[in-house]
Every structure is written in structure tokens, then in C-alpha cells.
Length: 216
Image 1 (cartoon, rainbow, N blue to C red):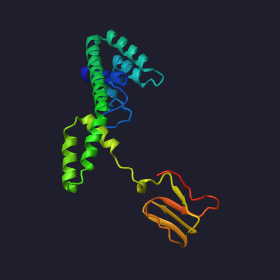
Image 2: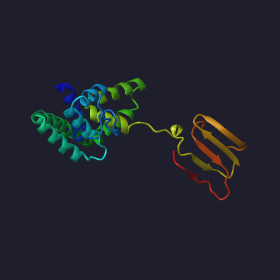
Image 3: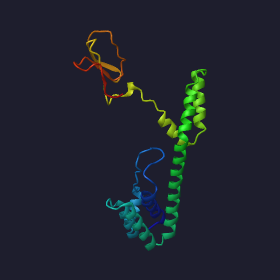
Image 4: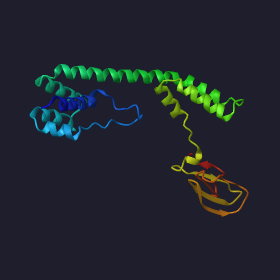
């Protein structure tokens, strides 16, 4: 069997063992590891390739089981040194990624305070504020910057439609239901107001005592 397809299959198998389950681009996404059509075709044409392909196509195997079978396969087919070197490289990259993530997490509180200080400086114009925030973010590592952007992502009430909020005001006898940017229904009259698109339901429910229920 050609060496290149074999190496591709080896890399795929080892990646399922040592590459980790969280990628840089998607913080909680699992890696999608699958051989290419060319690799499968090449593997199926040769016993040694087919035996390797079957290793990581077996859904019942644990990662330890995959590791053991790949090692055995590599020894039987004179790929032991190559597989060992590749596995060590993958493992080192995983450890480096984890260390960088830990460092970024340690630096996160101070970085959040720095950004908050810029945002709270009322002497700056809006454009100056944005420029200073951008400049500060660009000075951080990519991992810390990613954590900061996630932590600072606004979650306004107007964007929350999954958990409607019920606001009860028995004095006004007004029921308003809103979803997204559109008020669905409004009945009664009174002086209470509700922001359009807030996802709130203002209702007069007997015995509610003016309690706000739900979450934004």
C-alpha cells in the first residue's frame, strides 16, 4: 500500500486518542475525525491498510483500545518509529494548548478589569473608547482574547426569547405579550409601559402581588 494513505490513516487514528476533544475554533465542539474517500479506497485495496482502517471505525473501542491496536499495527507493519514520533508530536501540542489555556484563565480577571476601566472612562469619545478597547485586546494572546470576548459578550434582555419574563402589575389591568421585536397582543389600558421587543409579558394575574417571574 502507498505510504501516504497509510500515514493519513495513522494520523486520523492517533488524533482520536491524543488531540483532545476541544478545538481552538469551537470552544466546546468535538473533533470530527473521518478518513477521506481516497484513503478509504487505498486502505481497502490492501490488507494492512484495511486492518488499520477498521481500528478507528470500531465504535466500541475506547481511546486506550485504539492506542493499543494502533501500536500493535505499527509494530507489525514497520511503522513503529513513525507512529511513536507522530504521537509524541500530537501529545506535545495538546499539552501546550492546555498550558496556554490555563495561563489565559489566570490573566482573565485583570484583563477584564482593564477593559472595564476603558469602558467606564467617560472622558473618551465613543470612537476613542472602541479604538482603545480594540488596541488593548490586540495586545493579548489569542486565547486570552477569545476568553475576554466571550466573557464580555452582551446578553441584552431584548435578545432573550427562550425564557419569557412575566411582569405582573395589578394596578393597570394591562396584558402585553412580546416576542422578538414584535408585540403580539395588547389588551386593556393603563399607564404601564413595556419596551417593544423585550420578550416580556405584562399581565394582571390575581394574587401575583406585582412579582416579576422568569428570566431574561
